[in-house]
Length: 401
Image (cartoon, rainbow, N blue to C red):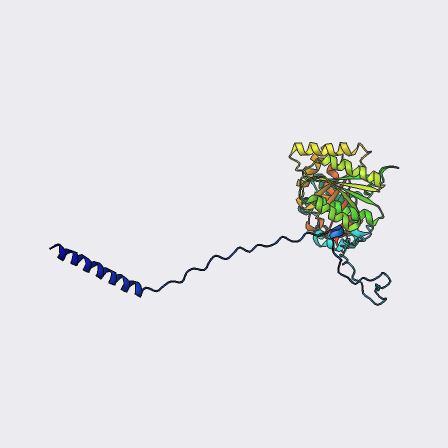
């Protein structure tokens, strides 16, 4: 029995050995991995040798200064590029101021002669009854002549027509021309005072409400003065309107007048003071000070305008204070004029946009209200459309040809 068990064990061992050989024979023998490569060691760069350890240097080709050739006469040497220098704007030569209104009379007459023609038509009637005189009065009032000047003119016309008797068109025209000239005042001094003193320039301050063309008028006035051979310094004291200083400086550059300006929203009185001081230092003939546009209802702003006047007068007397009025505003311009006259001593009036209204009687009304003459009139948008006021040329424009 023990012999049988031993035989079975031997048999099983033999079978397992045979099976392992078969399985082992079927497997492929994998190649052994290659041994790791030895790390590459990079030798440090050799240090330069000095002194006795230094080796001989390699021979190099050298040239003497005599062997170096210079560029020939025909050789082109590159030059650095020349950057273009911006050209200064050309200085314009304004038209002569004398006789401007005469040259612009046709433009003025297109808008103004309805007043003169209406009056001549009424006066030419065979019978001048009360209704006709009322129509004449209404025509004058509509043209903004004002109540008192209208009554004065109608009374004079009544007397002259009664004495004249028979009235021809030429006689009526001469009669009306003479009476209108009397109302406007041909003998008033209409020159803009810019003489100044021996060591100080003439100082002109320009005032007015917003929208009347005050800054533009200041620039155009500079052109009038330059045309008369005067040197001008502009003071941009309108510091509250952002574009005012730039606008005035552009006007000045066109005629070669320097503009003194300050920071935006700065003190206008300080700018005006500096402008006059610079004018004295440069020996300029005239200093024009453009002030901020004042609404006549704002008391604080009007007080500031008085401050500007007082500061400027520290250098010397103020020669001229020009009030700029928009002729198209009519009787409202008289309200503005009265308030300004209370703050500063107005010495002259500038009527702008006179070519844009048929109410030329405002010239008479504003002179009667302030007791100062109209000295300049604006008759368009052109740079030379500001003209000295000439009563005869104005009345001729009113009556037409």
